[in-house]
Amino acid sequence: MEQMAGLLFLSFSSLILLSFSGSVDAYKNYTVGDSLGWYDTTVKSNVNYQKWADGKNFSLGDFLIFNTDNNHSVVQTYNLTTYKLCDYDNSVDNDTVEWSSANPSNTLTQGVTVAVPLLKEGPTYFFSGDYDGEQCDNGQHFKITVFHGKGLPDSLKDPSDQAPAPNAADYDSTPDTTVPFDINNPHDQDTDVKKDSGSISLYGKFLDMKLHGILLLLGIVHMF
Image (tube, rainbow, N blue to C red):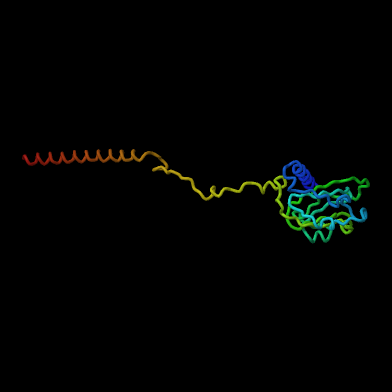
């Protein structure tokens, strides 16, 4: 019931947005059965919903408006088997939606208006699934083909479908990075050169002192 309530809220909200937007020429609202409404032949003997649907060009973003009462349901399915059986009990969530449910125990009949958006291209089936499919067997069913048209308006799109795709550059490119000479102790290379030069200089002085000492010793020996 919560799912159905959410779908109904989305449908009416989107219908209002489309009515006040500049795209009203792109999308249409079809009243199912026109003035006869949505009933089985035991209530309206002259209804023929397939005849009503034939010849119409249904597109994504269009709405079907079902004027009925709380003793007749509105079921939409993309499953041909479910449609032929007039039974949605064994259907799966992603191919069948019950937009409005009937209450057979209700003795007080109240009018109901159900707005159903066309969200998927291809064959789509509608029927009333209550009273063990009796209403469906008594003429309350029809099938249509939904064309792409101008596509779905943003108000009817799934938010997840509108999320921006990841940027390929985020994965394929590697930022330029300057690695220091010594990553643990970063410092200028010039400092190392100066240190090395100082060490060489000290070592040279040490050798020079040793050489002078040897020469002095040789001179003393020569004198004797």
